[in-house]
Length: 137
Image 1 (tube, rainbow, N blue to C red):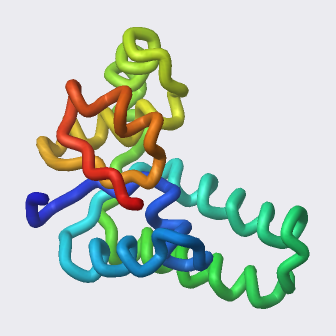
Image 2 (image 1 turned 90 degrees about the vertical axis):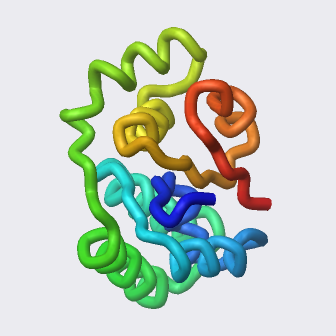
């Protein structure tokens, strides 16, 4: 894996909201220069909401983890504006049958000429011919 990587939202969420890939996600963010798309702010916040709404986790504790995740994105990652990626993401979404949301991260990896890091096996399998993709399991 190159020194610089593009993180999709599920990897960032895994760092701050423990799950099966959390240890591996932490290792990646600690050892690489990280880039993400500004969409990650909203997508990680949605993960936090699901933790409260569907998993019954404490709202205050989840909010604290969300604040840490937002600070990580803002202070540690290079953040690419989604608006700059829309044309490429649209083409990728249409040609590969993925959502615009996922395609934005693929387009960021393509633009940055680096590896996409994801825990989404379907996304990884679909785009690995377009960009280098590292699947975290």
